[in-house]
Image (cartoon, rainbow, N blue to C red; front, side, top):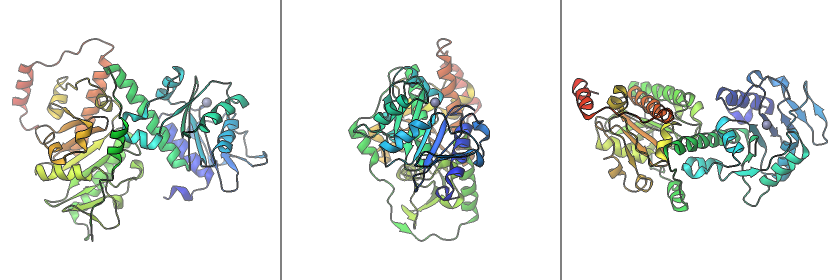
Length: 430
Ligand SMILES: [Zn+2]
């Protein structure tokens, strides 16, 4: 479905369902608007269940201020209009109170989006608007002033209130909200572990270089194996997004077709909407004509070439495990038998090295050490099948969540060397 061809009413209903389904608003909180080419603003209504919003609930505000709809507009509509006035480049706005961003809001802080290249690229540097009464003209002025600041932010934290994000269209506004909330959650988790590190200008520039422009080949009809892998990758990418192991904008999955070729997720396609035809065949370093693979393509290729036993690779951004990527705290997997057997000893690949020599990186990961943390860049998992890779990713995230939660209980007692030896002897094939 081409989202941009939907009527603003339908776009708003779809995105509100997505925000509510993702736990980023309550039934009463949050509002969304779109400005169309006529200058009309379509906005969510006041006092209607956000978990059950319908197309006919959306209100239209004309440029002359007249209203059309079955309900009054959101009481916070004045600040939507103020932002549209201040920023001609913004035609879609989302306001919500997602938990991690509210944590920043009530401490008068903004999340540093330089925690991951993706968060910086999607969100930029957020602003902070001073508190004013909800629905008041003053709040509208405070928020519009922040959006009109010289660096023209697209995300603004509202002091003791929540967050507002703007974009040219509602899809990008949603991606900003999701990515900013994810960054906020990761920073909060990483702070539990200790000092948090962020990317500098040079590292941001390094990560922005295109790495997925390969020569093209003319694709051949898909084999039975290729078709089986396409369905498996799509299913697990959808599940990864639903389980918050990937965001809409970050996460790559690939699977080996044969000794010379593999399938990989495309560049810049919303992970929730990934379709069978979106996956890109990469053969001997060339890409299927007309398609752009994920920017992780070179890394995945180097790993497949170095390790014939590896048949599936995932780059992901699970919210708890990602906290370890931005912290100096070691990730000790000797927690429970399942964790150690699935994850083995996990090392961290320094940020600059991730972009330096792909052959060296492939030595960090393989059948004996199938998981690595990418400093300020998420996690990397390799395995013998698509199912196995996803399973390992889930175990990784569950292990990280357990360690983080244990911090308020006391010191973790890691399994002893003798216990680890007994385990690896009892389950040698894992
Ligand atoms: Zn609000």
